[in-house]
Length: 361
Image 1 (cartoon, rainbow, N blue to C red):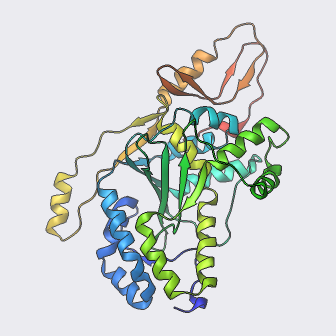
Image 2: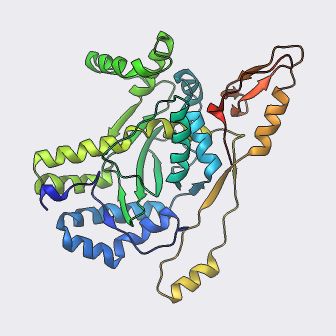
């Protein structure tokens, strides 16, 4: 493959013909054995190095709980992702993996809608010019320790033109309260320079907390991707391999806040309602008769609006206090981690209203 042909943000491969409502996990699972995958490998032989990764990824998808975030749930994750470092740090102290592995996916248009609103409100968002916006995106979360606090996060996605891909790198996040790692002086300087654009940059305590959070996050090559990278190093020049690494950095650049917010939500007791698993037995029997692969059972995650509204009404019952807006925040109780939705407290005057934390249906 010539360098001039490598124009996308990562190596992509044609996916199966599919419907608009197909789940991403099913699309990824079906890919390795598809005729179009074999055709893509003939057109671009290095793509065959990805086959073992797809196969291993599929094995893990089959054996992990799978969740699909609806639009409101995606917006709430992004709302939490805009929290200050100190709020994140408080929540992370009780965050761990709910299962040894978890697959979470959602429609990218739901993220795009929130990012457009956030940008209009002055919230800093990250846009990578070389990255093609996907149609669906998902995260495979896998615990790397016995406590569920050392976590690997590997993204995968499908585009509107039918191409599917996985990130060539993964995030590794440690949420342990006892976690410590020394940051090099060079990295400290780079970090503080990067933080100058944040709204809390003039608060030393928040900067220090943000540094601790950043120190908890590293980029790794998952064990099942190691062989593919070894093949790439033999196949491509150092320049091309470096380009692959840079593009993987871009793919992960804007994901760490979302993933941290997702982890806090998975550990919170009052945000999500999870729909019952759908019975696909008859549908999969029908698909089997026509030679189609069976669909995976995926549970849809909804925002728990009734509980959120109840908390808001209860919190808004303060009397003889100037009305003011209370931002969303986490509370840690003996029974677990809870998210307090933004609400107006007090009954004197009118509180200033900001759309920053609105979750629209």
